[in-house]
Image 1 (cartoon, helix red, strand yellow):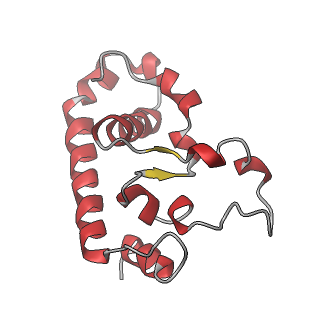
Image 2: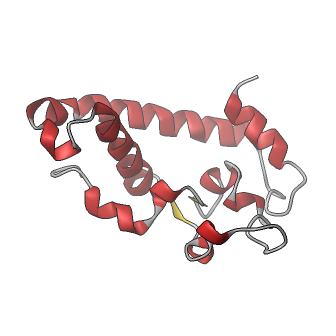
Length: 132
C-alpha cells in the first residue's frame, strides 16, 4: 500500500474527514505530482543556467518548484489558524484536532491547506525568478 493511501486511510473517521473520498483524493494527489514533475522538468534549465539562484542545490530547486506549483496551481496554503502555534504544539492544545491540518485530507479538501512549514508565507520570497 502506498504512503498517500495509508495517510488518507488513517484520517478516516476523524474530525475534518467527514467528506473524505479516498479515490478522488488520490486522483488529485496524482494530478499534483504530475504537474510538479512537468513544471520541474520545464524549468530545469533555470537551475542549470543559474544554480546560485537556488543555493547551488538541485534539491533546493526541486523543493522550490514543488512549493510554487502547489501554491500557485493548486492554491495550497498553510492553515492560517495554525501558523503562530505550530512550533509550540503540545498534547491537548487542539493543534491536531482537525485531521485536515495534519493529514493529506487538508491538501485535497476544499481549503487546500496544511501545516507543513514549506507552505508558510515567509518562504514565498524564495520563489525562483521568472516562475509563473
